[in-house]
Every structure is written in structure tokens, then in C-alpha cells.
Length: 96
Image 1 (spheres, rainbow, N blue to C red):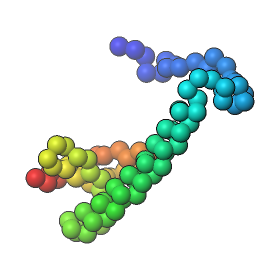
Image 2: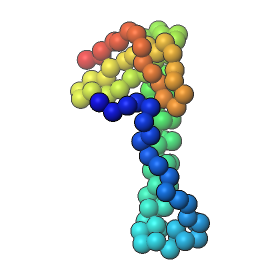
Image 3: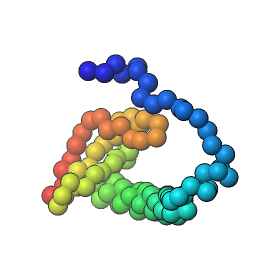
């Protein structure tokens, strides 16, 4: 098993944006990544709306989260958050 403290990447250098913009595929990448960023923001906004509705429906006062699992969703009670993402620890309610 690999050592957890071992580096996973190494920077090999930097390029000025003017040179990167001349690379084949850069324009397509920029367009698609911009659209993806917008969609992620919209998806998060929609998920927050569903989360609020679930909290109301389930009479939950604390933080909850959910994930789709095929034809149902799994709802989690969140006891503590990690920076950048939610860490789920604790109760699980499966809605069928």
C-alpha cells in the first residue's frame, strides 16, 4: 500500500496564458469548462433547494445531505463538515 504522505503530483513548470491560448483544443476546453462551472453552480443551487424541502418534510433541524441511489435517495444526518465537501457521519435514512 502506498504511503499516504507521499506526494501524488509534482509541478513541472508554468506557462504564460498567452502561450497556452495558442494550443490546439484550448478554445474548446475553455468553452466546455466554463459551461461545466455554470452547471455545477446550478446543480448545487438545485440540491440545496431539495435539501431544504427534505429538512422540512422530515422535521430535521440539523444539517442533512442526500445522494441518489438508483430509484431512491439516501438521506444522511451530517454531524460535522469537512472543508470543501461534506463528511457524513451518523444516522442514515433510506427513502424508497
